[in-house]
Structure formats: structure tokens, C-alpha cells
Image (cartoon, rainbow, N blue to C red; front, side, top):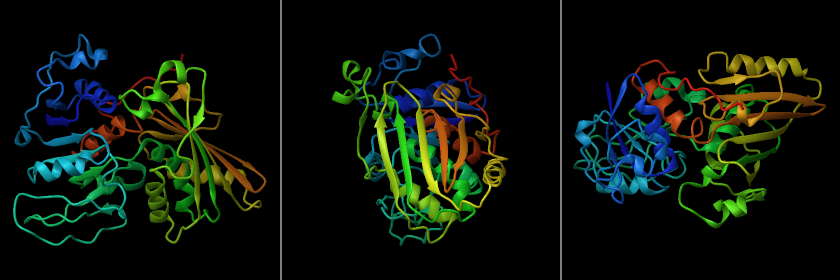
Length: 354
């Protein structure tokens, strides 16, 4: 059994991660860390687990007792944790925050003694400087549809962002065939769980219900990792990704549309063929020959993609569950790949289709 530790156990992503791992055939949760909830039952916070576990939160960090750590803390907290708590070299790490996703923004990491210079990063690897005999800590960007082989050999994985996952899965087949040449227009709407468990004015039910709004237009934090992945497949890509995010009147899911300029002479069936070929062996991403809706993916680790051509414009639609394929489900998928077990283990989930 894979022994699992979870750091930052009180949030939505941690709750979903615990739910998945409790029923995972090859994983066992060793501890769930939360200083503010220490010694309290997990079900005091994650009430959906009532009747499934009697585990309690702990403020202890038995890092040597686990094979893999999941970081479910707020953005920036993962790097802070590693500065204060050196992790044994043999323990693998999957970070659900944004700390190590983008090569252009490395974060300093400590080791268990000594100093060394960072190693150079490959196109899919983030290598922040880290002291210690182990040298540079390399972080693989954990989008399986892009870096599957690298994830299989990784010690540390930076789990992608939720919006970034949905948007990239709509665009990767085009980048792989060097078909992105002009600015890309993206609109995507997310559920309230995307804002995290901490209450805020824009997550209050009376505000969110029957309402919509835009936030972080053209400056969302997920754009750099999207551009990084597109450039990995299509070197030299430098067009703009104009992303308009929306807050939606629902709890979970991301519905994304992307508009890309394309040669009007290219037949739609040729583009569809590229998508089907690109995702032919993907475990959870599927091209679909019909219009999409959110309930086809909510409560699953699936991503569905659809395209249609309108003269010189290509409309791409992609949908995911922001807490599963956009966070905890993809993290478990990455764990499965890292430990060489069935990629679907713990992730055969039924969508909330009605």
C-alpha cells in the first residue's frame, strides 16, 4: 500500500483527496495534518465523510512514515513549508498549489544540509534552487496529457491549476500541430468551490445565487502556466491568451470556450481527427462529437473536449470538474502514474448527470 500524508487537510481539495484515497485500492492515509483542527475528527470539517472514517486531524508531521505527501495549502505556503520542514529525499511530493508550476518563477527550497547549485530544467521541469547534497529539486508539471512519461519518473509534481487544466486540454492538440498563430480568446466560468473554503463576499450564497461576474480579466494567475505548456509543444509560441474568467451560479465545474483563428481551407474533419489522435491514449480526456454540458463531468476526473469550425475561426469547448480533474482527482492520477499503478485506480467515478 502507498502510505499517504496530507498537509493542509481542512480545505475543499483536501476533502476531495481524502474521499478519493479512502476508497483507493492501493493507498492508505497515514495522517492528515491541520494545526487548527488537531485532534478533531475529519468529519467535523468534511461532513461528507460521515460513516466512512474515524480518522482525526493531527498537528504532528511523521514525514518518514509516508511514501508521498500531498500539499493542499494556500498558494505560497508549499514553499514556506519546505523551508521550515525538510522532507526526506525518498518521499515524493504532489503540490496542489501554484508554487512550482511555472519555470519563470522559481521558489527557494531547503534540504537536509549543505549547499549546491540548481540544475538546469527541461521543457517540462521546474528546478528551483535548493541547498543540500541532493542538489536542485526538480518539479514536473503534472498534466498527464502533456507530460505523462516525465510524471512516471518524477519525485516532485506540481499539479496544474483548475482553469489551466480545462483551457490547456482545449488547446494542446493545436499546439502539437503548430496551428496556434494568432491571439486566443478564452472565456471560462467556474463554480464557487474554485474560490476555496474560506468565506468571502463573492462566495456568499445570497450574492452568488442567480448571479454572475467577471474577475481577474486578462491577468489571471493561470495564464503563465498555460503559455508555458503551449510553448513546450509549439516552441516560439508568443501570441496572447486573452482569458476572461467568470464566477458561476453553481458549486463545482468549469465550462470553457476558446476561439482560435485557423486557415479557412482546413476542413473541420481534419481538425477533429487531430484531437481524436492526440487524446486516443489519454486515460480521462475524451473528444466528444456533440455539444457539452457541465453535468457530463461533475464528480468525475474526466475532461471532455469538442470543436466546431466557423469559416476562419475554431470554437473549442472543454469541461471539467474543478475539484477533481482540476485539482484532487488529477493529483491522484499523478500519484498513480508516479507509483506505476493503474492510472484509473480510485478514480472510476460516476458523473452527477441528473
